[in-house]
Image 1 (cartoon, rainbow, N blue to C red):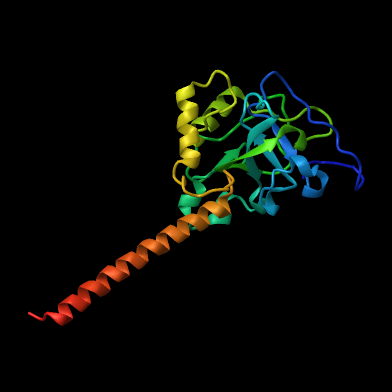
Image 2 (image 1 turned 120 degrees about the vertical axis):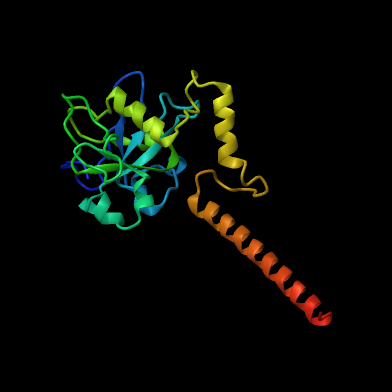
Length: 231
């Protein structure tokens, strides 16, 4: 957690913008009960009360930005937390001074005049979340929020294949491609909230079970045909 002497129930300060661009700015997603219900991002319970990194250059017209979650792996470090699931490592990008066993050249850095985060941390690029900017709070109470250096921000966008839906400079073709990636694989599902990982996993699980049942029915049918007409 960021250093704070704030008393329980005290009003949180409003979010600050470091510059005209929000990209790369690290802020804090507070506890759920401290976020107004009408702008609650409705993410997993474990995601609240954690730092996040804003990926959008500007908010949407509704005030929404896209973020990645930041984790300290419980202060264990990436390799310790996920050994031997090396494939899982690829979804976590280290922020200096944290390191990564398979990404020695993808260590994200702050400018020299920016203090490091309170803990060794990693950006979780498995999923982007849509959050109202007003739901976020400053990472620090003074001294300004940490902001990634330009080269590190560019590297993070490349490794995560992030496409900014709210940046007017992003081409319409890229925006359409990303929107299709977000919803195109599940066009028949109504009421599915984009970014709801549990819902997506459930639908994929159901699809896999259905495919396996079809295979079993086909095998049973062939077996019965052979039994009825032996060679």
